[in-house]
Length: 207
Image (tube, rainbow, N blue to C red; front, top):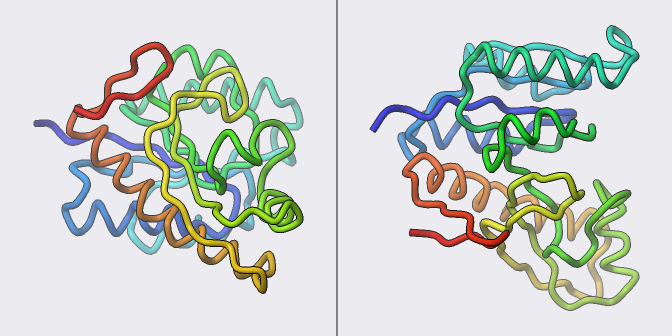
């Protein structure tokens, strides 16, 4: 089976990117990270990529103020690289419909809650955990899903839960969830690389 060509889109620290890098280097994922694109030139994830000799590219608002132009550029770069799977790992920009259509069921995202809870437009970063704690849920978690035109509405690939303690603050819950994000994101990429994921009526069947 040929190696899966990956592109990872980031905006911040890149801990999920690091988990993918580790999975590739250990042979857990049959693939290669051919490009890391950041929407933030100060993202530490860029340094992580450079440390492993992975090509990087910055496509941010300072260079390309027009959102449509940024998305078109990403589209052109990914097509040129012949990327097989696009991974959104803490990427804080909306993906264009053009990109979603071109890479249908080949863009995945990791979200820090058990979708459909605490998901959709406006739910990202600490807000997800703040609202989970404020609501008093006893269980939260993370979800890896395909990306479609509906924010956090694509087919769910994997989910994993964590317990929420009454004493948990945002930073505590965030740390718990981040650990399982690393696990299920790399597992989902592995399954995709092995052609074991099938989408049927907006649901995922793992073969």
